[in-house]
Every structure is written in C-alpha cells, then in structure tokens.
Length: 148
Image (cartoon, rainbow, N blue to C red; front, top):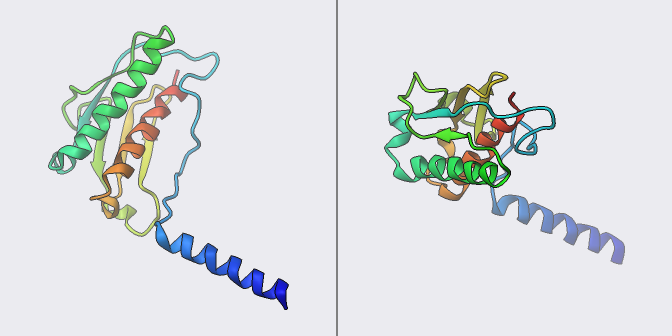
C-alpha cells in the first residue's frame, strides 16, 4: 500500500510540474558554435519582420543573440558573425512570424542553407514570453555554427 501511495504522489508531482510551465519543443539539436572542419567566412545580415519589430523586446532578443555569438566567436579567433542591418526580405537571415506554428509546441522553426542563410519563423503563441524569445534567438542563431 505504501508503494502505491508513493507512486501516486510521484505521478501527481509530475503532473503539477508539467502543468506549471508550458513545454516548448526545439526542432533541432544544439551544436557547438563552429563544427570541426567548418569556418565562418562572412558576416550574415539579419532582417526583422516589421510584425516582430513592433515589440522592441523581440528585436532586442535577436540583437543580444547576435552579440552573444559574435563575442563568443571573437573570443575564439573568428572575426565574422552577424550584423543587425539587413532589410527584411533581402537579409541573409530573416526573422518573421508564422501563425501556422500555433499549437505545434515549437517556439520557432529555423530553415537555413549550408551557409546559414534562411528564415527563422517565430510562433506568435509565445509572444509576451520575453525570456523564451531571448532563448529562441540565441538557440536559432547557433545554427550558423553548423554552416560552412
């Protein structure tokens, strides 16, 4: 009976923990900033969709994410990285909102080519969760380390 009671308490604790914070799936694996055999050969320009830029916290999240990786790479002898000066749509990396992600559990989806160019699509379901947006920015920009 005591064992059954402990099992129920454990199950209840797990349910409470899961209900307390929404789980957010990440659709890619975090990788070291620069994989062996690869290098960063140029700056990538980041452009922010005006719909994202309406909230300065989200723009700041990507500025901070870019600065984080630029500092990391600079500290490891790599002088290139990200610039936040791209015109949305024409930039190397475009950050946009994708309503089709609502209900998927993904905070963002990053589609990029082997050079790191592509689109980071944000799930509007998580707007208002500024700490999560900062994590998404740093995580999704880390995909640049996979590029050659």
